[in-house]
Length: 169
Image 1 (cartoon, one colour):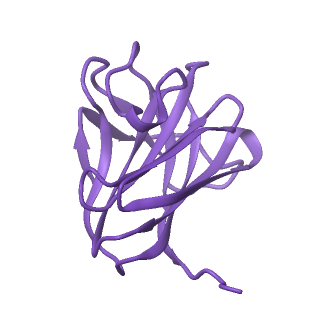
Image 2: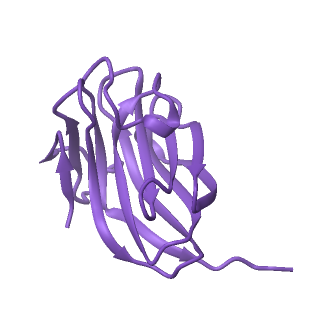
């Protein structure tokens, strides 16, 4: 179940280049406080690499960005921010027992992007946090106060947390 902190989710009429999967608009309700969507208490295997991915599209703001976070036992976490105008990775950071963070951005048609963040998580449960932000924010604090309220479109069925099996040579 998704939780909201100073955010709102609405059904959108946008589509993924002609297809009709469900698209949601995720909006910040405050520019003075932290704002994000979260999923808590996801059971995971301790010490393994996990990847969170989601399909995202900007709304109107030219400085629009998207933030993703994987949290183990707080404050241990990995963050990635993505520029929605270009589809580029703006930054990647990790802290504590969530480490070796890597981000990826894949361009789709009609300004849709698939963004992903992976990290090794030394915890038996994880929390996922995501939401709109500004491209001017530092990666490790993307969810905090920003100069303007913003929103993004996401495809909720594309949101996936996967265990990645790494090949050791």
